[in-house]
Length: 337
Image 1 (cartoon, rainbow, N blue to C red):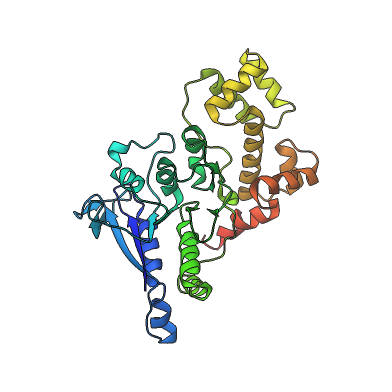
Image 2 (cartoon, rainbow, N blue to C red):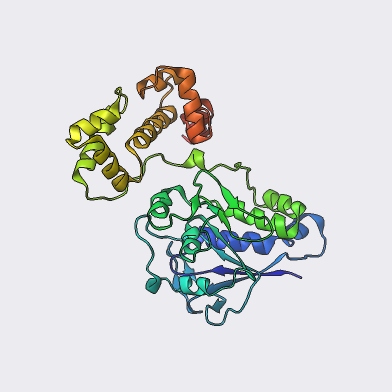
């Protein structure tokens, strides 16, 4: 018997995430049989779109969506999936503008497993389903989680997070992280062989467990602290200097501890972490756009000891400098020119 799945379909839904999840879950136990084996189809999931109403509406990507059933008439399900959502990375969603939040909070997690892709984790966090557990989401929403959902053990370096394979929330990170979530659900509820077949039919490459290689080390979060903004502007041009944190504090005219506190409040990073992130991000840019040797890049961003730079780079990004260049450098995209 197929498991009943409800995918939340609201005006905030990302079309690629919503329909990608729908297509791959509906296809489990059906497409391989039709395309390859000729066996009778045995669908793993019975999938329905659930939304505020069954009237057509444009989703976050502008594509028109029609839910199969409204929140009011949805009933129970074995699984609820929150797809990626077009939400602000700086502002907490207002429940009055997001009817899916109240509906999700009314579900019984002991009877219905609730999972999310990408920024759908914000809905799970709002419902308190991620308190005290490791979870992931798109890396650009890290600041939002740190400000508003501090009980969540956020792991934006991970591509998929779950505490128990057979129950509890599951979260996947990144815009195309829905693929990893779909494979997890197919493998767990339909078996490894069906997951392998889905990966083959949909050409889903193994990206490993990490989201870290894709994360930007520096994201722009709006704040009104002029002193911190001045420090950010200065360090953007002087990240390679020696002892940059002390110099920023000195230029601010504030005591070092006061500067550090205000910097963290404004940026969600300590001055030390901010400088490190900026240096790594600059090194990434050089690896992606130039053919400069790794040693020269390390020195340019403030690290004279090349082995130490390589270790630090891998610890922060999950890749060696050479692996990053192969994955994101000019040679990868040269064939498109």
